[in-house]
Image (cartoon, rainbow, N blue to C red; front, side, top):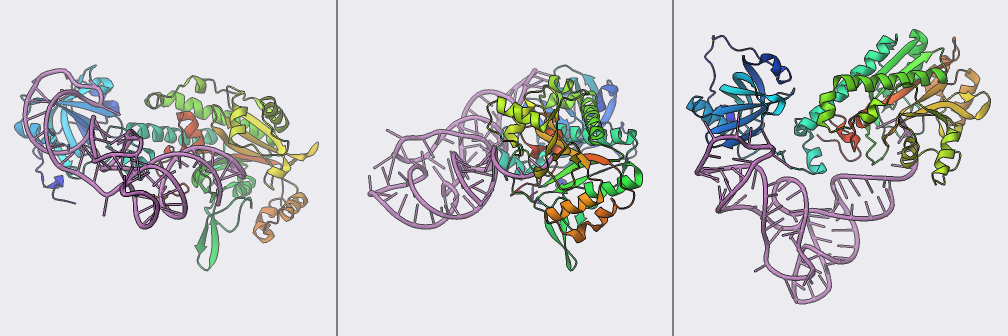
Length: 453
RNA sequence: UCCUCAGUAGCUCAAUGGUAGAGCAUUCGGCUGUUAACCGAAGGGUUGUAGGUUCGAGUCCUACCUGAGGAGCCA
């Protein structure tokens, strides 16, 4: 730290041993109208008008404007407040008063202010209340998180994660964590991050699903919820190299069961956010009318019907191909709610997908496409239950058989029809928040060409 | 990996091939109800890097670096 470090500035505060006003969160400030309270936080902004100072405090739960009038406080408190720098940490005491002119509707008549650490004048907080570019903000992500907008996004992310767990817990699912270090590709096709594992190689998981199939046979209904990794060189607003998935898996279940679960699950999550995070959605300027339409049932179309829709809309999409970002947007535009696309060509889907008994060229998979062009938020379906078919598929796709011996065991010892899906948390957060890019949906995004901070 | 666009003051951006500028931020001064406060003044630059064309390059050309958007692949 430099000479300007505020630690050298003497604190102005109450004497020890005195009865101190209670420490309160700014989000609860309305409960303390007329009372003297303590707020612990940071300086968000400071406006001056001669002998009146308007510091705005931030404590992570909200903003509170303080007012410091020269004639109402000690000369020390006035001088200290006037010299506060943005994001200096502090403890303030004062009386709460309703005032429509202040942000949040309440204001504090500051009587005492204690500086915890002053941001040095010669090294000011880099993120000002003005505009900044994406590169600059991403470079200062560790500080950008203090902004109101990022605070709102990550609070909504928290609500979404909690809603996922609350819903599945309520339906009798057991959370069983799956490993992050794995010996081989789960699906064989996409690129994995490779790492050293003592004298061996290991890979960072791209899905907990195969392990959840094992735990589903142990518990009946399970889910895993953790980070997953894709070493794809994707460079779009929908991709991260490290992202979080929640993956429920059910024994004795079919594609139909997975689709029913998916629509109820997504509806529960959206409604929970609407109920509990109205303020945050407002901060983001999200038009919630589209979210309010999300309710069971979701429209269902087969892959064949999806191809027809695309062709009707002027696309030259051919049966057998996989949907790109533009195709997904075209499809989702057709429906006000998330849409479930099912029964894809076997060739474009993973090796473990159960074929449709009446049409072996398609598999019992389902993708859920979010509205408003947010793309695929869920992918899943029914898994192959037959031992011989699974073995054949592993061979056909040239997967390392030795790595899948335990997975094949699941079809050997009491195999049952089972199904599940994975939901990408960041895309759901981006959709519900109405964001342009998934990079703001996680505190520290990992992307192609970005690992810092 | 490929395609497109961009890089100028701490930040956001201007500048016909001809003297490098503004707003914000910072510092100093003014203001008792400010809301990205406002008003006045000051400091602040090897124009991403390296070459090239030209009397002269921020501007034109080449390569590289960094970033953004998209494609492919995917949640």
